[in-house]
Amino acid sequence: MAPTSKTPVPTSKQSRRKNDPELVKADILAVATREFSEKGLSGARIDEIADKTRASKRMIYYYFNDKETLYLHTLEAAYQKVRLQEAELDLDHFAPLEALSRLVRFTFNHHVKNPDFIRLVMIENIHHGRYLAQSALIQSLNAGVIDVLTNVYARGVEDGSFRKGLDPRELHWLISALSFFNVSNQHTFSRIFDWQQAAPENQHKLEEHVTEMVLRYVRTD
Image (spheres, rainbow, N blue to C red):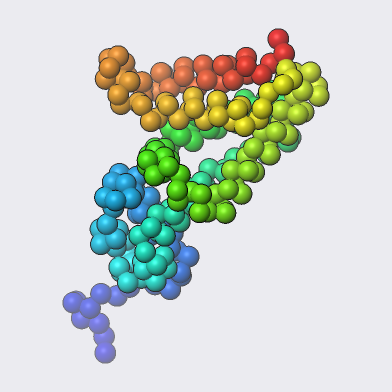
């Protein structure tokens, strides 16, 4: 029987999405990221997430059990994204100063391009890191970035370009803090000081300032 005008015929793309669990979960996580980052854990609703995806509410519960588990998976996906992109920088192939400069610039620009990540981190801080602490994946991912920075710093000390006595965790804190504030406080800072902080020319200046501040902090000279 040929389909009538009232019978929707799924496209091959829709069929693949429906029959591919990984695509379905990726779709759910993408929508959940926006919902949790905008409304927080308490404000986000599974019903609304289901309405904005191709998945049913039942399917969301099938894959993620409950809202708190979905929130945790959303956090994991956000951290995994940034850490995988950091790994692609391949910093071992650059001299220490260049490697550190590339890491700082990447962090600054990643945060600018991913404000949802910043909001998720802020929300998790409201929860005192309780959900993050439940994730072995996030712990492993963040230990990895410290290992990378430790290696870059050690090479810099060895070739004389970095001063001795610095803690790579504190260096990571400095890079994160400078890059994080640029996004987390952008709207309030701009309004308080009547400054278009998000303007491309100002963002370029701030990227240069942050990079130079970190390099001055570690350099021997």
